Length: 202
Ligand SMILES: [Fe+2]
Image 1 (cartoon, rainbow, N blue to C red):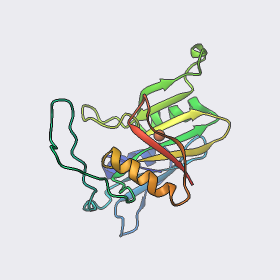
Image 2: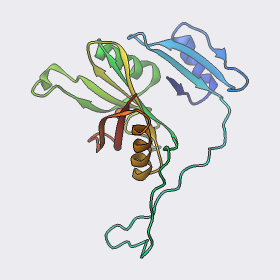
Image 3: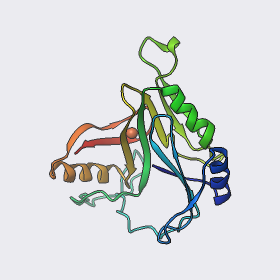
């Protein structure tokens, strides 16, 4: 997993603070990287100065009627049966055996901040067991969570989530993957913490 820092000076500052060095990324990518390892042994890369690429063509959103806002009158629309086109990475979820240590590493070293904590039912006094954390972008709105960390019996990657253009793209893309051997593990549904989601297993 790689995080984008504000600029290359920040990458250098982070490398110095962690007692390591930056390295240039390949010319095709551009910019600078520092490669770290979190307390759970998960590799974490922080980059800056990478080339900005033009966005790929996106799927078009559908036109919906909401309440009194009638935008589509007597016009049929059918979502195309096609793979969902990913717009961007939404978030990554990790499991950690030393949850608090892992959480604090991201807060202390990457300046991330907590959006929400979860607790085991009936055991709130024992402290949180899952956190949804985001990049601190000040007053600039950002995602509810870029990274989530949950207490668990293994240090491991759990899942990553990708943004697509709308709910129809999510449903049609999920159906496409189901026809190619993927199984639904959850959803389509709505997290309390976040957006409508469909989880798939290979
Ligand atoms: Fe998720």
